[in-house]
Amino acid sequence: MPQHSSHLRTDAVAIWTAGVDAVRPARLFGSVADRLRSLAASANRVLVVGCGKAGSAMAAELEAALAGELGKVEGIVNVPEGTVRPLQKVRLHPARPAGSNHPTEAGVDGADAMLRLLASAGPDDVAICLISGGGSALLPAPAAGVSLADKQAITKLLHASGATIGEMNAVRKHLSRVKGGRLAEAFRGRRMLSLIVSDVVGDPLDVIASGPTAPDPSTFADATAVLRKFGLTGRVPPAVLDHLKRGDRGEVPETPKALPVTVENVVLGRCEVALQAAEAEAVRLGYRVLNLGAFVEGESREVAVAVAGIARSIRESGVPVAPPACLLLGGETTVALGDSPGTGGRNQEFALAAAVKLGRDHLPGIAVLSGGTDGEDGPTDAAGAVATADTLRTAAELGLDPAESLRRHDAYPFFDRTGGLLRTGPTDTNVMDLRVILVR
Image (cartoon, rainbow, N blue to C red; front, side, top):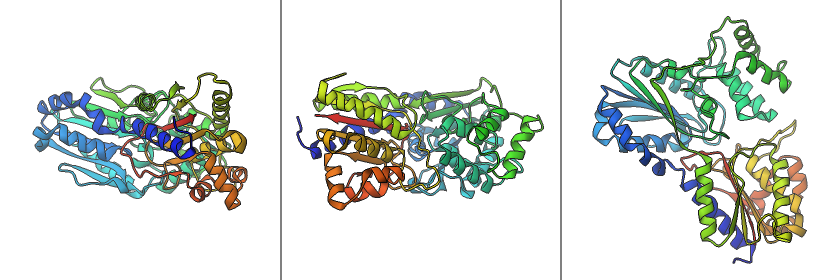
């Protein structure tokens, strides 16, 4: 078994990478390729729409599956700028800069083009919608009376408040012309098949990318309640509050609570698949595995403290599993930034918080990796970070205080200087976060 921090880091990265590789579209589309070909063969036209960080790879795999029917295909998919590639029939539309989670005018243009395409459907046309994580920001279409600037402002406020993805989407769906099932409402053809790579705990169809092709159980009243919960009713743009209040009064139609049986949603990829592949790789490398599943939520640093305690128990007591051990967990935590945020993301904060909790006395023999499976973590160029004993040793040599960096939510500069950042670039998938903790 490896005995040094560098070996632990190498193994942690290998295990994390195996998990991410298992949920790339190239691995996922084989399960639906025959069905896609059958659907296309029976159609007059195949209209392709969609959004998300996996959109480019999903569209490429769709074209490969429909190689014999490409003459029927036309479409547009909103994706991050850095993932655009030339395809034969589906136009990949750059809807936002890489590393940004905020809607843009380019995203609105793409959404409007999708609505026009779906509205043009004839009775023998079918639609295929490609949805993956990040789709909420990539597919903006503000409701009448609400500007893009208004949407950008409320998105930033919700992010800074530490709102969960479900809470954020309850608001965004009620300020949109496409979210909350409204994209599916625009289609008048024979059948719509929505293929989904989930980045949400539990894979709720109405929450992934704000559910553009799923019925929406949330209401205008729920959206208003979210604003009240985080004390935002006096801080949001007036047009946002006015639109939600009008919806509360029944002056604006609710999002659809049911959709036709001709609309079908299929989840192709999820965090559990990544965890299973990561577990297999860890076993291959000689570790005993404790897989805590994909339902981990909460404040990032608080979850990290709990996980650090488990890692210490494994090392010192062999409980709940004897070392050499690999602790795996998925899910998606949040970070409440407060008034003076630094630079980083929830995964970098997780790794830093675990390192601070373990300290120089207990971190030796342990590696903590936390990374976003999409290759992004907050507004940075890193997927996350890896913390080992070498991290704290280097920090001491450089005069860096990890506890102070954590207090300021400033994990990125800390890991940048100590060599702990996990940089992968876009991964063409997104199934929340994957964390690997190794104990020798």
